[in-house]
Image 1 (cartoon, protein in one colour):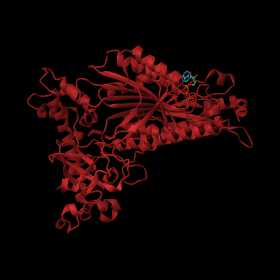
Image 2 (cartoon, rainbow, N blue to C red):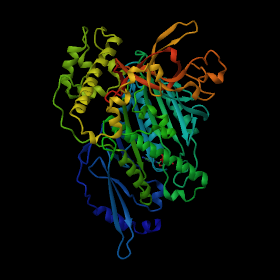
Image 3 (cartoon, rainbow, N blue to C red):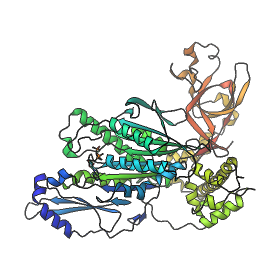
Image 4 (cartoon, rainbow, N blue to C red):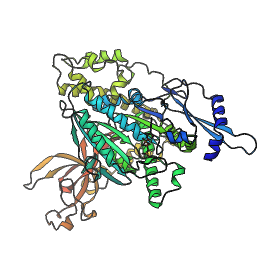
Length: 617
Ligand SMILES: Nc1ncnc2c1ncn2[C@@H]1O[C@H](COP(=O)(O)OP(=O)(O)OP(=O)(O)O)[C@@H](O)[C@H]1O
């Protein structure tokens, strides 16, 4: 086939010259009638042909469409039984295309630069480079890392921050610290649900040079193995994480900036020379890339409050626990809130493409993958202004509300929302919201006032979402259209059988029941009121299970005759969330509660809008 391509290169070039695209030009930032999501961009970078590809006589098969910043055209030469070879052409819309003449500096300025202030302000920013082996991922990521280091260190970003860098490598299920001689590390989820890189070193970075030194040291340790396409092909995912601490708001979540050089998806040509171990490695890489795709798309759908395709109204599912790569990136994908709030994320994917005509099959796979990642938002008619719905406010209305509602020391609307609409301010990372409030001249605004004002703004948004939700429920979908789960959820009888109130709650304790309790200290003193979800009887768990305080759960195995007295249950703790009156269930934090410590049964109601529980009884 390769010889056929080389022999017919002139005919192929003529056909490409004569190619007339079917798709009409699409305005930048829009695709197929939809609008690119500014918090989630999918771009393509087509590298130039390399000297050996040129010397072999291969022409280019992938092009950035002239005059259109978001269409990639891919051509193949088809053999025909009779007559001359003909052209097979495909077009792929993305949010931004960078052709072979584009520099890394242009890629940075166009799509990556905004990620840096976002993470600086406390958000989560992620850049993935994806593509076939040898398509330019490492070239792109290493160049971008330099620009990121420069932006972080050149003093142009406002405020003081402490920066910490870690660089790890994931190869299959195993993780290594590339800043500590490839020492093996563990990816663990702690009892608060946060992912920890247990054993990985974090380096405090203070200058661009120290940052680049670390990046260079990590690159030299990256696991490599030869493939046909690239002599130093990366067979692992490399994750560079910069954690950005804001010392002036100690309660704020740290900003996170991830730069990720994914392992190469392999060309079919390459696979023919693989032994069993390399084939297994390739399978693992492809599986993790497939889970990554589902997670990226799922999270974008969740953020836009859209259901997953073909699922009716079902919320999109983000399967981030299905691979080590996505587990490591829990902060990016987990739609459930951590410490009370879902993290505000900006994500950019750079799909790197090798333009060589001999590799168009692999390039097609990369471009299809990029296409699948994209969640196009159909332009919505702006909702009519409603003074109780922040998402309907334009910048002027938002400023008016800030001026009137921010307290006796008014927060500067010019500084908090210089250009944002209400919907945009809702997406702002909380630390950035607070930092902007604190800039109000005169120094009269305290962190407490700023935090309370942020909660007030959110509360307004949430109250509105809740009332919309209950209005929808009242207008009612026809009963027949509810799913079985929805019918169960909406049936109060399921939770509270009519005669339940006649039976003391301690006689009907069962898994799933929520109880309030006060732990009894050794001296018989009662601790503060807490809540837990009953999981099982303490006797039902194995010998090694310990609760959050390190106590062995099953008393019959510990030989603790005191503990063995009375019924005891293993419970997951219910903890207050950041919003007033809201609770979260921390499944991983478990405590043993004796029945005699329990005080009452609690009914918690799940609220779809805030994704928290609220007490109804
Ligand atoms: N935009 C570009 N301009 C010039 N050369 C490039 C460009 N992109 C990539 N290259 C060159 O192409 C070759 C392969 O690039 P690179 O190693 O970045 O590929 P890769 O996708 O990371 O491959 P692998 O997955 O196998 O690690 C390198 O020699 C690199 O210098």
